[in-house]
Image 1 (cartoon, one colour):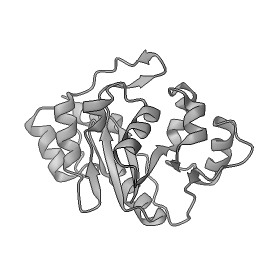
Image 2 (spheres, rainbow, N blue to C red):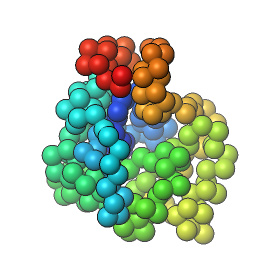
Image 3 (cartoon, rainbow, N blue to C red):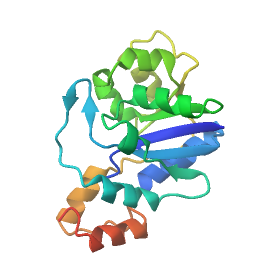
Image 4 (tube, rainbow, N blue to C red):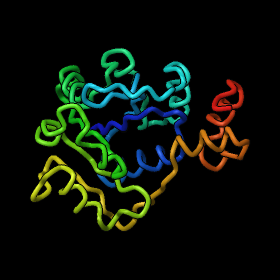
Length: 204
């Protein structure tokens, strides 16, 4: 199978995650998309101490996004709590040797990509999918080459630039801010996620 992994804090998961997952599946003919909540945010040897909701809560919310082809994986929570993308891909490939894995990156993550653990090895040896965010669609390929220090885009890196892509700048940060300000978020998250946020009094 061809499986693309979308990692993140999912604090909370939102409709932007669904848009990315469904379009990667559609345009790149993936068999499955795995949503993979991280345990903690780490880049190189630095741990980012941004206060995340508990792993249990974030994983439970992510499960509301599942369907027949979008799955939620607890791999990093159980096996790679540093959440290094390179290590995750290597270990998952060992567990599923007959499948081909891809790692999805939003173009907004390019600014921090050189802070990733062994980022050059990640670029050289793993399959990456760059999904444009907001209005960067027509410039994203140039940004990829500059950020990843590439003269041309190699075959293991896919830059999605289809004109039919639906782009969004929905973010978990903006949703948390809106909840804190008692503003509606029903148009940004699935109803089940909204109800879970209310029930557990998150982000207030």
